[in-house]
Image (tube, rainbow, N blue to C red; front, side, top):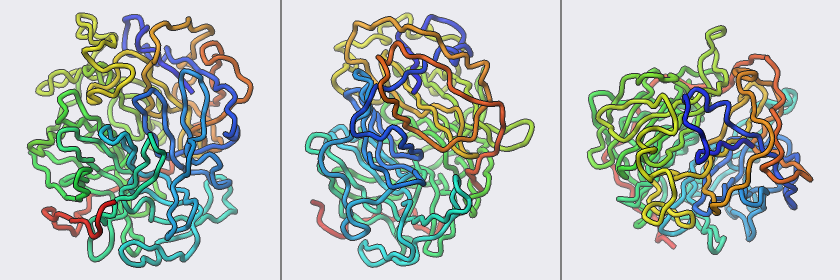
Length: 495
């Protein structure tokens, strides 16, 4: 795992930030297998500073630590206490779901999950929702072991499913998703953004498969919303002179206004989602949730350009960090990892600019870059649209066979204490590893036994100079057969 100490960054060129990341080694974590990897996990930063992971992709064995939390103060992984998610009708105690949407709900202090796919499913299994659903499973070749056949399903979290952080109880809203041609909307790889003004979850983009397992990238001339107070689904049309093309692998960040989502990047997926996709050329948008209007932006100065599967972190409500991801290789035309960083100035949405230095003058001339009782405190989520105030951004090295290399997962956490120990050790030389990666078994969480304090164990990652194509994909805009004005009411009473 890598840490970028935002509080103590000396002012300098944004391009130099990639050299400021420090590699930390996780302390021994009882109950968490040190060789258990996962990627495409459901991941949520929590107000107490911890990082929560649910499920994920692991070809070798069902995950032992299905739900784990990383505590930055103790520098350990912890298995979540209490019962895990149990879907009695659709596989019982454990269903290995990945690529689902997840978001924190401050009013109920819970995490909501929706969509995704299931790995290690049972071939020809019939799922049960409002009625039985058959033929949702299919076979695929293993990415790690080509001689091995895996079984996947497009049936993930079919209902909005919540885990209460206080009680550790899992519950599912009984509101059926919106149906198209008498078939539920089964989506993976979409973004979920909480809108505090309407207490709704905004789902954008993603990849849909129908009853015949034919896939399409979901358009953005509409989005799905889920009213968390009344358990109501709705499709909402969007307007604007330019509507974004369909995509996955984008980010959707709630800005300081509380009513605007900043969308960056993405890639178009073809019907055969095992093929390479094309980066979205239109990669800079905001969506206003009062007017439902898209605004498109020209490339700002110092832009790092289109990309997908990157990270976006809002700092101090003014600076949006766009980091890492996959870009088009000039040599091969394929999607390859990158470690570059851009910081966008999001204080004035009428004129989008980028910062050439960080900390930026806006924050240096105000107290916004320090945690105060008047802003977002260390103990409470407060106005989450402001992003983090001070603290650190944490990233996880992700690797997989021809899929992902050096990349930081969008993780951020608050520091619960003001007295910071000095960071001993050397910094990672990102210039030496720019654009390089190795083909390793995928891992998002590698657990290291017997390490020392996270602040004094620093080492560069082991990488080679081999370039390999990504196997993620993405394609042309396809108009869905759906009435955009439809409001879906609950079919059952909500518990």
